[in-house]
Length: 134
Image (cartoon, rainbow, N blue to C red; front, side):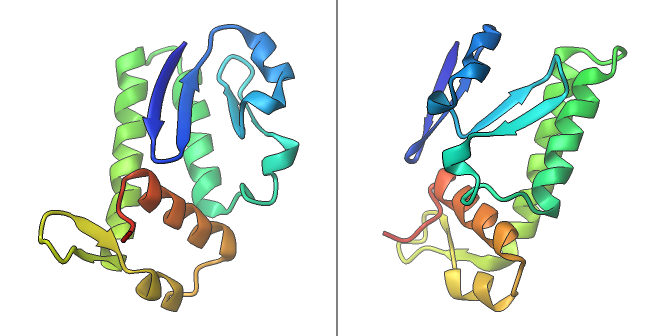
């Protein structure tokens, strides 16, 4: 099991499939062996999947299913898609007042009028990357 703390959220990797029977332990469960992504009942509204989510999920599953790919190649595929998503987030960020990092400009994000699921995803991505003004 691997834990990583990201701004009010945890990412955990499990090898025991019994975790899938414990929706109290996760919001999103990615089962690579079965090519399934499961959303816990309590997280359904907050985790509504938009096009961006589905693309990421499909990439993960397709890459993991490819018998020609090593684990490091799967990780590289995910990293490449993640960079693409950050590229999409960049126009809605600005340099912080102290000039040290980029922060999300929430008003600019809202003006783009993304579907609610996409806006929510990008906002939470910014939060996970510590890009919110506090």
